Length: 256
Image 1 (cartoon, one colour):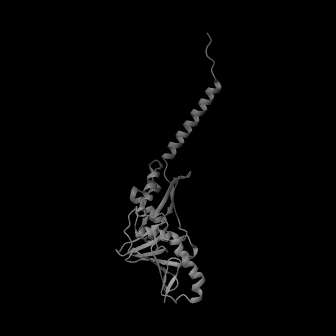
Image 2 (image 1 turned 180 degrees about the vertical axis):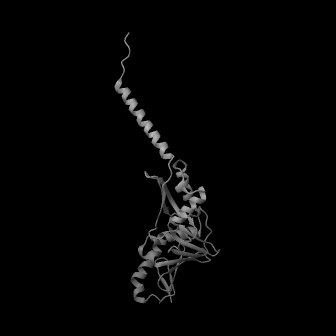
């Protein structure tokens, strides 16, 4: 009876894998026992160039949550995923990306929520809505240059966009529609909701009040408004009319 042949090539391959595994294990543990060499925070500015949250705010939020200087922490103790969750709990933060590079530098990249309208309602509330309809408080760093909404606005709830009837829902829809048009987004500075739940637009130039009425047939109303300003208003003068009424189908009714 002959002894089984030893496959030296297979044995050599297993030894090679074992050595590689040991090298990886030692390197991993050695890296885990080293300290973070620095903290780099990058808050990506909004298209306007502004920042609702500063790099200093990010550092303070992490210090409050973890109670220690992360730059002097062992890498094994850095809870990267928890850091991201803590930062994304901030109302100004849309996304937080935290990672450690090969030089043991801790990097934090912050993408901000972008406000599209500021609500100052009859109940004294003061807040922003971002592009996804999320509520944001005023920032201590700067006041965003966005459309301002005033008047009889429905109270905010997280599901306001799902409601069948809500002036806040209609207000947000009007804002989104205005922002898709290059002329209107730079021309309208305020949306007011009167006590009847009707919408009034206030332009940046001129003294007119533009009576929109309801948010129904919005695109048609705004198209009539654009045609009136671009073709009729330059000849009549920006201060000639007190009100411009878009509530009647197919018409632009002006009052001096």
